[in-house]
View (tube, rainbow, N blue to C red):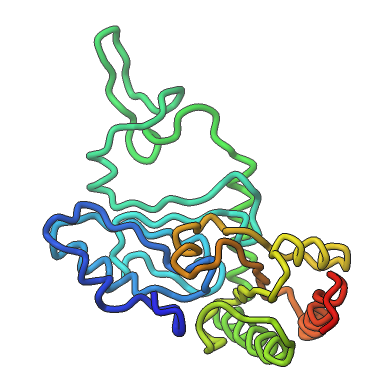
Length: 266
């Protein structure tokens, strides 16, 4: 990606060619916050006969997603990022592809008929849901989705952008703090990843934790991106509709003191 804009350059999309069988892409980067052009990527994949898989874990909580418009073959997201329970998520797949695929788990409910010689699989989606279903997780996730829809994605987008703009403005005034990704707050989806000169991200997180502020620190399960950026670890503040301007200002105030608390004199 372009380090200044965090966007995928056209040359990366040009790598999708006749040899490509599968294209997997994150809808929104959980490090940079950038929204990737998944509709164009899916179109390019289909043009060469490839399948397109989109990870929507970071996208679905922050704006309205239309899987049919994107035309992704598979689209997945997790429950815990959209106010739901942990350990459950959603996998959307095109029916014709799911019918062609064999089940990857064996157990109760996923078979229609079984003999000593073989078996026939149950209809979709049951053939992929072997064993006891996580019913409580499904009910919790459904309630979370209803809750978020009541708030409204237009309001979530507005609130995300407003708080991100305020946070980035506050952070720009703090010496030794650098934001990773686009300079445009509206291209962060509420994610502000950053570094502090001389302080390891794990130390940043520990110091802020002692001030009752929770952030994420580490490689964010995106080590190749970190290697590309020359940043093996970063700290990440994640904003959502339940955060307030007051919390953003408190965060910035505490952030300003991190280097001093770590023994630096400037």
